[in-house]
Image 1: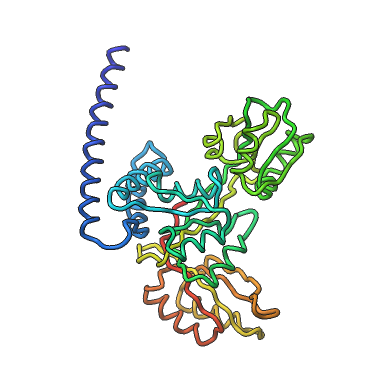
Image 2: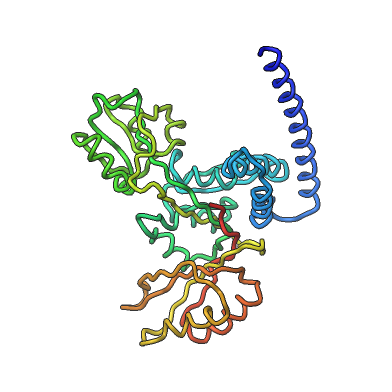
Length: 354
């Protein structure tokens, strides 16, 4: 047994040497590409193509999630050799927004936590950072309206999307639930774990705070307190996970948008986000949507928001399959525009992997 174990470990060591050699070669090629091209080292369409190809070729036993995480980090490290990258997100550290940022960009970036969604937009608009990550909708709690409102007036473009499975954990200084008197968390997280908290901690006081990161910080200062937050918050504040996956809806997912000064080039599997408005008359929405159906373009989202400059007037946020530069999409938007009082392309970008 000892001899077989030693033989297997020797094979792993040899494979590790080959992996390091190939990773170094990849990094050198990335540096060479960086010298040839202009602009940002981050190309969302190219990275999406790399991840899709590798997931399709994955022979196992590593799950798709592990393969994507591995290569996102490799691309992040190689990208950092070309150009330092800064990414703003809705902070503070330890939030799901930080987790989404790391999922998309890897750890080899400079992350900039900011206090509000408005501040993320403002920082990007004044060239303070290169990219921003903001939440736009949750599968159980619905749209993040502030993000939608700012997209209407901002010159920024959507260049990517991130789907983050929201895993809520109960975290605190010590193991177990004994002596727990207070639970801190963001209001949405408390709502998402309402039934679990009712069953397991009916006597504990629930206190809403500005973010899950702030909840974890407060729990780290009080042995009688806990926070509902993600794993990244537990790691950052040195807390123990005393109960995992306590959310009431097991498929709870938050969608985030990646923002920049320009959107992405076509990747082959893309989405385009639009803001549309028209006169408030019977049948006008049908008139707007008919060209999409006639040209075989699927709508993946349709949501309305009141317009701030008009009483009982609405803007429709629409996501469609395809890139704005695709012939069918371009022709359809040309057909739709005369029937609108507003048509704004918010961005075209690669469809996120699940």
